Length: 480
Image (cartoon, rainbow, N blue to C red):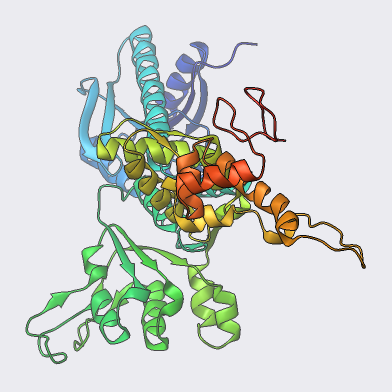
C-alpha cells in the first residue's frame, strides 16, 4: 500500500462542500480528516501529524482571519491554507502564525489537487531548509564546546532539547568548564537569538552594588545615584540574562530573584513602580547549591525554581579523552587569532599536557596553549614553552627512583650511591627535551658544559640524536 501524498486537516462548515472536498482529495491519494467546526478542528489538531489545514469557513475573508486568531493558540496546529472564491493562489495577509497561503475555490478538481500538492511540496522544502539551518546553528553554537566524553555529549543533547523553550536553566561545574559558553549556546539556539544576551558575574560585583546592577535604580536612591539607570534585567528584555556564581547572592537578592521567577516583575532600587521584563534566566554555579541550602546560605524555594533544568559539566581531569581534541581545536583558534601557523606539539610536551590535572579546566588549558604558541614562535611547542606548573607536575617523584639496598657492616662511597639516581634524572631531563641537551641543562638549572661533564663522569655517551646512552658508543642507542 502506497503512503498518502499528504495528511490534510479540513475545516469546512458546510456539509455538502466538506463531503465534496473530502472525496476529491481522498481520491487523489491524500489522507483527509474533515471537521465542521472550531471544537472539532482543535481536538483533531492535538493529535498532530497533519501537513496542512485547509480552511473554508464560509464567513468571508475577515471572518476567516478572526477564526485563525482563535486557532492560533491551538497546540500542533499545521500551516493554514485559506480556501474561497476570488482568492488568488499564493501567500496572503499575515496572520497569527505568519503568512497565510490561499487557494481559490471552487475551481476544476484537477487544478485544485495540483495547487494543494504544490503547497505540500513547498512546505516540505521549507522543513528541510529549516532542519539544515538548525543543524548549522547547533554546530556553530556548540563549536567552542569540543567533546567526546559521554557526559559532555549528554549535556549537549540537553542544550538542544531545552534551548527552544523558555525554561529556566542551572549550569553547574567547576570554574573554566565552559558554563558561559553553554549558556550562550542555549541563547543562540532559542527564538531569542536576535535579542540581547547579557552576562552578570554575581561574585565579582560588591554586594551593595549588585542589586542596582541587576534591577537598576532611580536618581537619589543612594549616594552617587545622580540619574535614573536601568538594570541588566531591562537590558536583557526579550532576550536572555545569564547570572554566573549565583551562589554568592545575598538573602535579600535571593528574595527579589524568587519574586521575578514567580511573576516576572521587579522594582528599581528606590522606586515603588513595578516593572515587567520578558527575560529568560540561565544561572550558573561552581559550588554545590544544595550544600549551601543545608548551611542556610541559599533559599531552598529559590533552588527549586532555578533548577527546572540542571546541566552538569564534568571537570577536564575526568574527561581525558577530550584533552587532545581540545588542544587541536584551541590551537587552531589561537593561531587564527594571532595570524600564525598552527604549531606542532612535541611528544614530551604532549605527554605533560595529558598527565596534568588541569585544576583550571579548559580555561587553564587555553591559557597554557596560548603561552606555548607565543613562546614557540610558530614552531614546535616543547616542554620549556609550557607553564612551570605543567612541567613540574610531570617530574619524576623522588620516591619513584629505586635506591640501592645497603648491607649493614659494608662500607660505601656516597658518590657511587648517588650515581644511578643522578643518571636517571639526567636521562629524564634530556628525554623530556626531545634530546636537546642545551634545553635539558636549562631545565636542570645548569649550563651545557656542566651537563656534558656530569654525563662523562657517569659514563653516559651521546648518540647521534642527542639522547644519552648507557656507556654504549653505538649510534642511535635508545633509552630503556
